[in-house]
Image 1 (cartoon, helix red, strand yellow):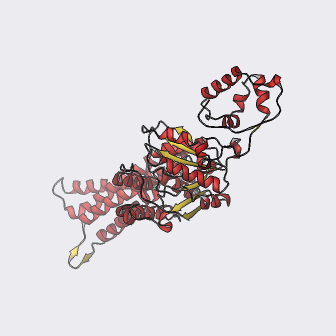
Image 2 (image 1 turned 180 degrees about the horizontal axis):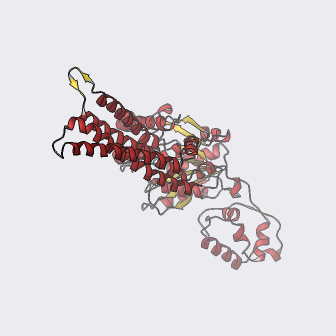
Image 3 (image 1 turned 90 degrees about the vertical axis):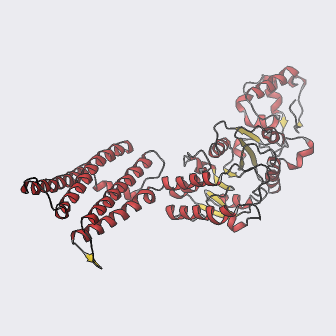
Length: 470
């Protein structure tokens, strides 16, 4: 028999319905083959399909078992600390998911705290350990304490969490690191907000309190505030702690976001996409304690900080491409106005060199704006970003034909200016030129030619992306 105890009340069963040893062995053989929970009560609750394949005498006998609603599924000496088994998948309200990679030192404390929270607050829940390939016995510890172990072979923090979330049976999920830095006994504020209808409930360590030694000064005073500030600016989010590892959410709402990050940036992607898709987001104060492990944490300051920043940039074409591009176009336009008017300030005359730099700024800025548009359109077609009403309105007026006409006009204008420069050279008998004058024609001509060429090609590319979008 499996390690643990199963308590049930046996009703009156006639001799004809007595279960034979052969039937019991058959039941457990099928149970282990299907990798169900190693206790009879949970096996009964989880597997109607398994029940249908049992011998008829065993089916009839099992129907006569009256299993108590809150059945204990653990050894007797740990009964007061374990989570309650649930009779069916639909009855789970809260799943607590902990990603795990060699957390044997702290995992038991985290599980016991989570179990105490479930029991003391009469929450029908489960604890899931999303194991990412631990080799220190973490899985055995979790199973001994009655938690579900979900093995996730694909490496990475995001992969582990998604594996646990997908396996969760609860309507709501609370995720938290298994390093004993978060307080799993205080999950009621998260659940309360979820019950009120919020889709994502973030913990805020800066409001709840960071205990001495819990967070390196570089993270506390620079890294986390900077990245959170960038996230708030880029995505107009109200979240005050983008990277808190303790958070709760409506499971289906988060699955609908189709999160794809595999590493530490998974936490950032959840907040960003929840904001972009206008989910209801709330915050509750939470405390952060020092890491309970003796080994160094998996987090790497500069590597993971860059990955979070990179993600914020990639998910915001507006700030990565559009804003810098518009700024460069503005500077280029100012440079053109100054250079073509031969403006002199404090004895400094702005001439063809200014015109050349202005053209460079204009070309780079225009290219950045094109990248912003193409990236946004691609991200929408691939489901990475939600549809943008502003972009849709723009594309009602700017079509492939519009782009081709505009690009062709710029291309022709540029070629005309270049031809004029050639004719000026011809008029000198192909001799020496006054570069201060000729370059005032050559530089704008070359710039317009390049802009027209870019516009024509980009119009076709946008049209291709638009076809996929439709």
